[in-house]
Length: 160
Image (cartoon, rainbow, N blue to C red):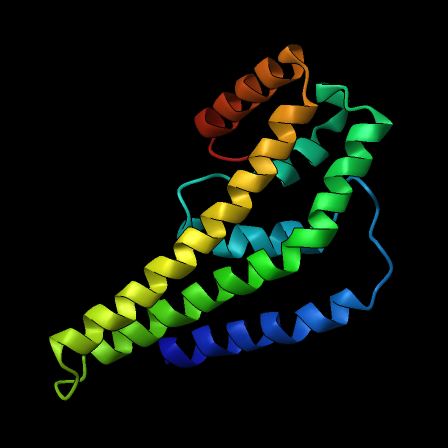
């Protein structure tokens, strides 16, 4: 049953992607659909999803219109392929668990499957590091300090 629910959720995410791609660019600061999607698959990476937090707290961080434009452009260019890789990891993990309970699957096959998941995780990390580089090159020292304070606050409170 859990596998069915997982696959149903993944299917809806995969279907929503192309539909969202045809929609006009969302509000430059907050896109709740993107934020919700990222929260659903956020646990597949150690690196936090910084951009939704930054955009949600744009007033606190005193973002300039140019920063908002650059961040919105990065999101427009990179969100869908990053999310697709994240969704593939979620599906791959569900498939891995199912395969690991199949006595006909060898240990070598499971290792090969896990290696594919590691490659996808590296791909997601590359996207997140690209976003981080964009943030670092765009932020002032004060904005970076404010982001660190904000992230600490979020970790302490358990959410944003």
